[in-house]
Length: 233
Image 1 (tube, rainbow, N blue to C red):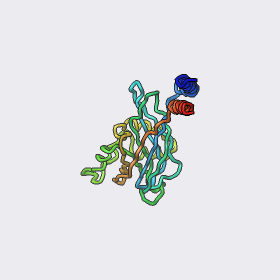
Image 2: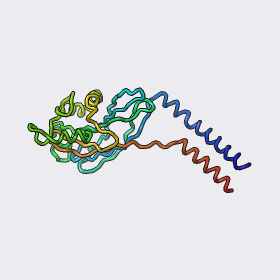
Image 3: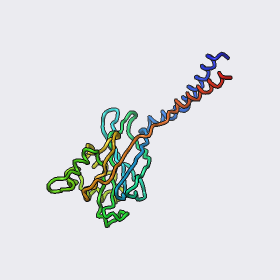
Image 4: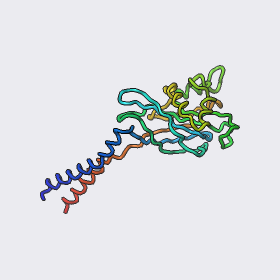
């Protein structure tokens, strides 16, 4: 068989395999929102528990919607070290773009390495760098930090703490996110954890999307490799 004919045959095989491989995925994508994986790095100064990932995304019709994530970790996230995990999020219709995110949880206000009732239900939340700087610059009434109500609206810190501790905070967190989306961070930079009750920065958070491997590229690569191997013989 001539080289050109062999290449055409290999290409046909690759296209056939791609069609078989992608058909179920395409059908599934039409039935359910696309899932995307995000790599999360949390570096808290104090231990955290009941940590949730909030995020918003734009649909193709430019509508914004929010979903509150399930708990990121069942175990305590210790302070002073970086903790990483991957989170799979449903971001809406095909073509939707993650817009903003926030990490929120209870933190170790007593600095004793655990999060419990003795900490008084204190909340740490990551904000974009501009909002965090505004919150931490203080004012005449709060020299070290502005109050929760000066930065975040709709719910008090105690209400959010109670929702987090309840184990079923989705409704409260979703509404809280809708009201405070402009204070959240985006994927293009670090977010700063703010501990309002202690008037301090509580650490940093970074979130990046994990690129999806292309099955089509893999299949074509395999087909080209076969063709190259056959040609060298």
